[in-house]
Amino acid sequence: MFDVPGFIEVKASAEAAWPMAVNLGVACICGVLLSWLYRRTYRGSSYSMTFDRALVTLTIITAIVIMVIGNNLARAFGLVGAMSIIRFRTAVKDAQDLVFIFFSLAVGLASGVGLHSLALGGTLFVGGIIAVMARMNYGALDQRELVVQIRWNTTGEEQPSAAYSPVLERYCRQFNLLGARSTDDDHTLDLTFYARLKTPGSAGAMTAELSALPQVGRVNVFYDEEPL
Image 1 (cartoon, rainbow, N blue to C red):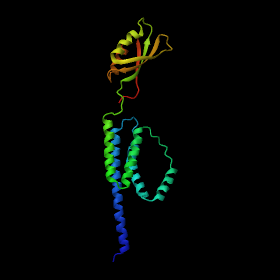
Image 2 (cartoon, rainbow, N blue to C red):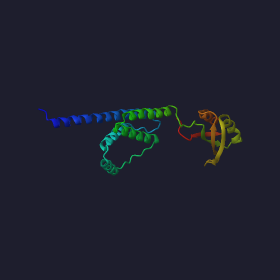
Image 3 (tube, rainbow, N blue to C red):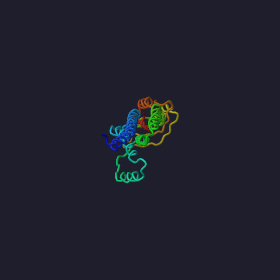
Image 4 (cartoon, rainbow, N blue to C red):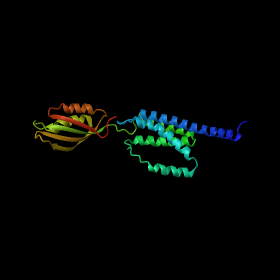
């Protein structure tokens, strides 16, 4: 003979466990997609494997937290109190990393409340936007604006402007002298220019021509941002 109340309780537990498993499965899938997208679109110089893995676990853990809270207001306040004890000291250096953290939280929330279509659809939609912007280098500067420093040897009779102006005029749409500074050596002069190139990517050729001038000892070129 079956213990009917116990059998019903086990059956109810199994029925309740299935939606939870689906929620966690959707959260895991979305977290893996976010992790893959993060690796494909990352453009910084300090990639962290632990942060990449944390995106997957953060999505799943968020879904678990939401399922724990459910519709219970007391649990929600209790969780807030418990989380306030924890101190997170890891600094987020890249704004894109912060975007992925909130992305993981949002997807985990949707998965935890059972909005599977929203979780998967949001992952694909927002992920597609991030991928397209990364592919197009959206927001990147065209590397036309730069600062040029020239070390000029004053031992010759030729005027500096007569030598460097033709080169800068050939490659730059405009250039302005920002400052001139004498060095410890009385025979050298450091000239600093702000320049805007006519064609992106021509800074290398311009630097080579300036360096080839007889009175030029050194040429430095600086971009506002690191070239991609």
